Length: 297
Image (cartoon, rainbow, N blue to C red):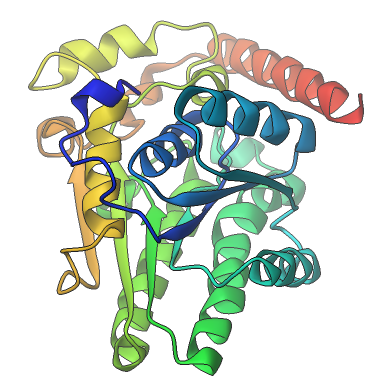
């Protein structure tokens, strides 16, 4: 994220206290940095405490301010309740960014229940657990709140080969649109961002094992490129910051019109052979094994 490309004034988010799930890496880290740069206090949440601590030190070293790392497995409602309770001890949140996710490409006939749950337990259940825990506190205390969920353009048309993600993200969209109406009377807003290709290391390893997909995304996109992180951050700031209080219940795509041009999903993988799928599965497994080993250190 290039701070010089932020389109909002310094200090815009002073007084905001925002929790970003999946905030230690990838898109979550980029948005956390943008909020911090504009004056917000940021809590970054994820499973890997060491990564969160390193990110917090990096961002505060760059911009000052306050970034609080908080390890939590959002697949557990009990863990979320404990973590959010700890957050509230330092003050109520003003905003929540549900960004934590997981995904990998797979032929659906190759999926196991465990493979499905690996995605659904984070994206579908974890997002609801987090939203409910934070939302109940806002309602009980009579506070307004602001929730932004990071989705995908597949919520409009589905996507082959990432069915657990397509199902889960669509469910989160339904949650946001439902609660925008149900909780609007409490001053709690819900909006969704549906990014197109914004390459991150984790996404590339599981959605484009072996590489090559990013070049295809560039050539297929009407703008001839992938997204820049600051562009995503500017949209997140608009929805999360002051001045957009009448925007509620919306899902906004940011993908250079790739969804309109190509469907924005993985339908192109229908051409893959059995050998290509076997190779992709092996690469994804190697990535997962490496990540598990890193979490145990």
